[in-house]
Length: 189
Image (cartoon, rainbow, N blue to C red):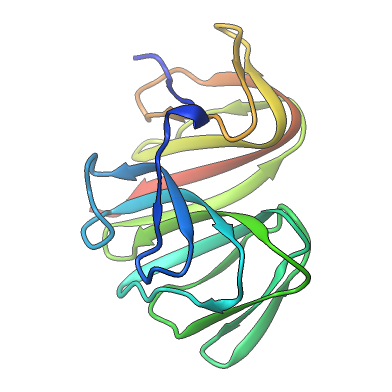
């Protein structure tokens, strides 16, 4: 099976669950799942104003600032300043979470998993890397800045293009000229 290429220009933006912003879903499992029944969901959001995050019961979240000056997230009363790009922050989707933009709009990258069914880990790569899914794990990689090339097929990935590999696929060499987020998605059931 060949890696699945997911092009940024093929995605459709949609309002946030709470109506407070715009999100663009990159991929969800199972295919066609909505915000209430996904096992995992990966998206990119444009955040123009400060305000509360939507609550997602039984969901773990990882958020990464991609563009802009950053934000302060108050999660169940504890503030976390997220002012360095490409630094993932994990928190509970159950938590009361409020966002205060530090100095203008941002773009963020989001990974959400239903904690009884899946878990995720986000790492950041800035050079050549090998995507090698472990048994029971899918690997998802998205270009956050610059571009990347899958060596075996010379497939170029531009900003916010992505690739998905299943655990039964051969490893993929990828040359990164910028910043790549790699998400390991492990099924728990």
